[in-house]
Length: 617
Image 1 (cartoon, helix red, strand yellow):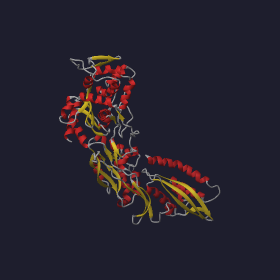
Image 2 (cartoon, helix red, strand yellow):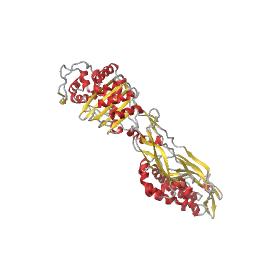
Image 3 (tube, helix red, strand yellow):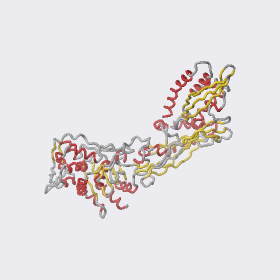
Image 4 (cartoon, helix red, strand yellow):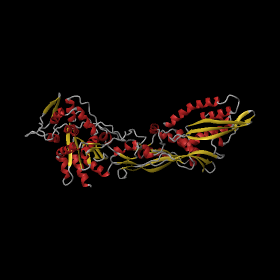
């Protein structure tokens, strides 16, 4: 945790401070008293510090120790700025830096040490103002916190993509528990494994009339511990509604849990015991944005009234904000319905003209790790990419091209399950039905660099990134006709459903667009595991090639995908089968889609999707 790192850093500074203070003076002056007092305070040797004051040693030691507790401070650091002497009186000016933890900036201020000679020895004139210039008798320091509730993750229209659930916040009000605080936190620490000293210091540093949240529990954990928590007298448990239950796409939105000691140690961020923490998905990627950071005030309290006397320092903290995604709830609903009756399927829909992700739906597969970041062989749907290079190389869709049962290209053998009977089919017909033996034969008609460039232009392997892990695709070095033939047939290439949806969107709109999932906040969240790369520019397709490729994809649309579209705009796409996986990659209107299904007809899934989407608009 950052609190630990800062403490270690200040421990090193302590040695430097001690040396510096000693080296500043070479003749008998008040410097010994200044040095011993500040070094003792910083190193928590309160006996040393108190012995250099004119106050009662026990009273001074208690006040110095209490200051650390009252501020819940990780460390103190001091630097002498000046020392002046006038006879038996002296004054030292020193700078103070206090690490309050919680990831707020170091609290710095300047204070003074008045000194006088007592019985031949220099002593610090003790008063509370030594600790802080504004601290008076009958007062103490305190830290007042105001955590902000978690913000929601919304769809593109501002509707939340999660519903509220109850989290249970356990805490105390200091002036109600009094000297029972150690007993309460001991029992709470035993149940939760949160460090007892951290729970106690949080109570001790807070204003006595404020409710102090200590631990937050999710519903199931709270129910499991309720009987034990009920046994802790004076512990209060406040139910709180928070937007933590994900709606579809659930894996993309992610789950939220209460903070545990292990997660607090791992995060080391602005979280406090009592906060909610994103476990995965966008809830984890935008943890800091969704939670912000706690507003913190350092104040003085009147010990008699328990009321605030003065405000010494204030940090507003980072303001938390909702996350706005590109998900369209209507499109998402259509996608969920489309995959419902499959054994296993992943469907990604994007807006062709922008690359914005409108829906991610899965059955069995995971929406994040499979639909966005999964790695799968595309089969002959990759011929969309290859066709861009082949058409530029002069291959004509009307060219006759046999579709034999077997063909060897450069030593690589290809097999086609069903052959064409009758007249020799054209390139376009082979593209439409995914004849692997025919398509592989075109490897000699295109060079490796052109094929690689077409893949790059259509986003395969380029460094686009989302706030979540995603897979852009890979293609090996095409150093032989066999390697090119396998690439055209999609056999040595790996893609994700997302990368293929973007390919379809490029042909549909005429321009490849990098994917977009989140539109606000506009800057990456510091908590994100994936930091998006610099934005990529859209890549336009060659207009004449795109026109031809669009016609080829219209011819390639299978009947199952087209059947649901009576009376609506046409569907464009191609299908393929790779062992037990089927693909459909295509579009209708401005919605481009890639469907991957296992032991199911991907084209039929696409048909249901477009049909449901059309009926809802």
